[in-house]
Length: 157
Ligand SMILES: [Cu+2]
Image 1 (cartoon, rainbow, N blue to C red):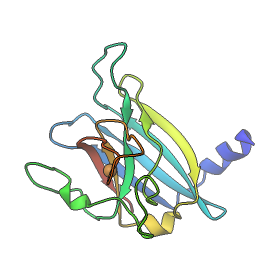
Image 2 (image 1 turned 90 degrees about the horizontal axis):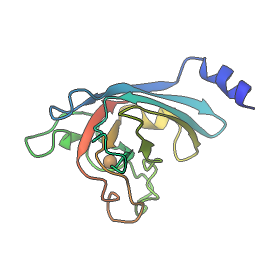
Image 3 (image 1 turned 45 degrees about the vertical axis):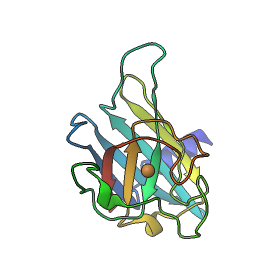
């Protein structure tokens, strides 16, 4: 099973996003790739430079969503304001938005993960944005899981 998935992931992804940190988080960068599988998507994430206090009990989880906006631009208070709100075509409450994804776990600033979801296909999220937040998503608070400021953003192409 794992062997098959790894071979599958060696194929070209159907969509991808180069993620870059805001002015406050210039070290954050990485790649999110989207592979279509059955009726959904394998999302693979490789991000480095995430904020990490280095303290043994410090927060090391980062909210991770697809937002409906197309651009990683914004203003002084929110550098990625134009990414808009969570991708939510079915008008569901959080965390049932199609764009709600598992939190990223940092390892001295690096997060690598891959998961399967049927909330969207790669085609459906092209032209939208991937956002990484400064805190864990609590999967309860409305409208966005109280996951803090937007640390990094990438447009899905
Ligand atoms: Cu978000």
